[in-house]
Image (tube, rainbow over all chains, first blue to last red; front, side, top):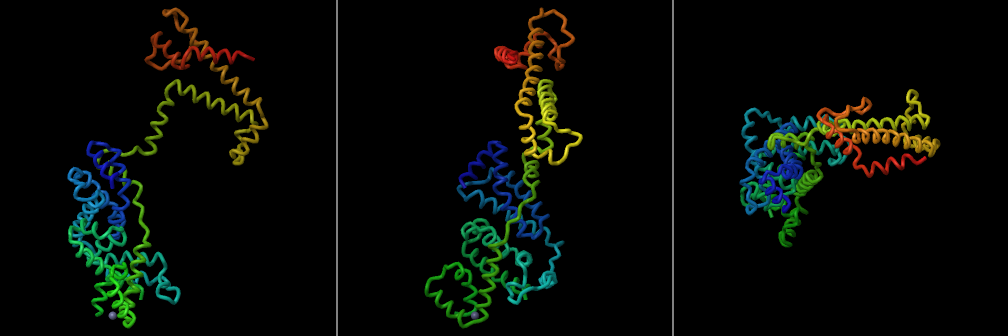
Length: 186
Length: 212
Ligand SMILES: [Zn+2]
């Protein structure tokens, strides 16, 4: 965290190497956030770049007193993802869960126990498919908590909602995710 | 506790956030209710999937692209770096050193009995090299070294002679080519000094090479 603030300070003095270091430190996290939210690598490629360009342009407005650089970065990224989601809502063709589960079930099922029915890789594909069927509000909460490993307080800052709201969204998101995966598994 | 209450407290239960009383109540319901037990099982499974999901690596061009879009530059690509690295090679003095190195290596190859035309894959093995170099022994090393110093000494003598000559004397035809721009005699003298670090070192080198 200290390191981030130092790097931001150096960036603002025009230190290009500091900016490059910031990118190396944070681009992977943001890339994964974008991928988990959209489910498409091409989208994650574009969105990650757009987020960092935005970050670069607004670096002056970052205030360490308001929270860590990482929180600020996540907030900018999340807002960008929500904008993107709204922008592309019209032309997005959401496949139904049934289609997704058919796609996954075409592969031969092995073993008797339901846990063994889907192979490791297929199960993670199912996770991604299920995430995409969550409402964006629940999706972002679950991704930030269970895939990006942020704590409740940090998520509350990123989403600009009270911590109680975060807790309830994460709980609802997890329950829905569990039901979706179970349905694909059946 | 109702099914709905179980759902509301599911995350708290799994994260160990419930107090003892609430926990006991919840477990009592779970013991009796198959549906809620199933739900908790699926929830555990989903969380386990999330926690074992592998992070993706962003494509390698990601950071260079962002750098180009923000500060207008990026770390030079490999080909650019190679070019920058090779640029000094095209300067005369370095070219001379490189030529010397190529020369030495060709002598080394010759002396070690390797026929380049009949080079096999096994010949490129460093083990083979050490073996053959050992065979050729110190003779080889001595020969290569003497050849190197001989060439050096010739160049020394030539450049020192050119320094000693009157400044208006015509340049001898045997003088090695100079890069354009260093045409004045003063420039030539400085150039040859720079080429061989300093005269005292030259003397030492020449003396040691003259020894049999
Ligand atoms: Zn129940």
